[in-house]
Length: 412
Image 1 (tube, rainbow, N blue to C red):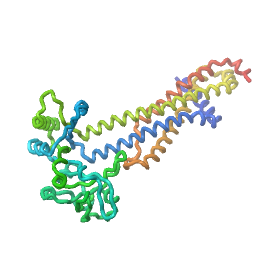
Image 2 (spheres, rainbow, N blue to C red):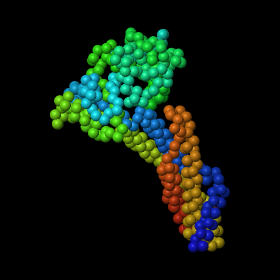
Image 3 (cartoon, rainbow, N blue to C red):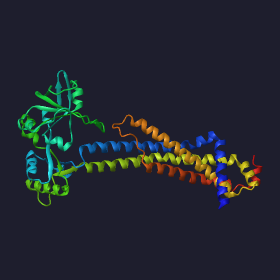
Image 4 (cartoon, one colour):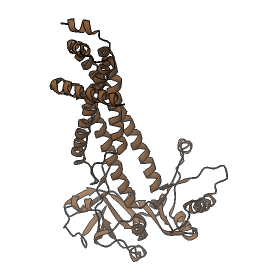
């Protein structure tokens, strides 16, 4: 056992001396590994950071929030059909559904137009008609002023709760509450400014105006309420599956759907959205990581080529070592350890560079979650580089160990 450890130590020492004696060549040998590992770590870290940012923003909406939307399958679309949920559907569900803490109806008031004007400034935005329950369901809070109240909806008041982007684009005062904005010829008084949410996939989450549902309905007629979204939160401890089953039964009876008819609606949950997004980001990470990992194989081939050249250059050195008593196993292990050290060194440097590049890219990304490199990526990168060092260093090591000492000493 002592002889084995002594041989291991001596082989490692010889490998380190060879690496330091040819510093420039060693640096160039590891370059392919450095680039490959840095690329993998950069891609994985950026995707993990993006995934965390999106998940945090979805959590802000509340993991227990559920959206009920109209759904038209491809067969129905080909027949020219378009399923919708009406305001009557909402009122029926609100009256008959049990174990729901809050429920709200929302609609996009496209017929009202998307242009808003303040003074000489104007911009395009989305106009949402809803009621006071929207605040509790969506978890949106005012930075200034207040949200819609029940009396706003009952009295059909022309009031508006605006996002921060709308206020900025219209050059409104820092406190826009009490100001009047024009929506396609109708004046609305601003009652509140929403907390800023930022951008998500390039979509501005603060570019919206919320007005009372009844107000939008009275200005545009009931036709704008033919297609709405229904959002709700289950009561604490309630079974979401039972609530969905109850709602489905109510809607199927109202829409007179038979047992063979598919649902004209679908339920979308925050957890489902997060799961779908996680599946997408995982697939993208694996594909991108696999593509950039090809450079690791290129780096491994580079190590093998340089080590083969090194064996040729050091033929006489190998012959002297064998003449002094070095065994073939010692020579084999020396060159194998040398390739392994070069691979690991490149992997460690690549990790540091990849983390730095990811941190630079993160400065221009939304969110402030920072850069996270998952442990599996670090272990996989270092494990892969170790395997590359062993696999691609084996051929040069075998070649070196089989050199005839007499022929090696005569080599010029």
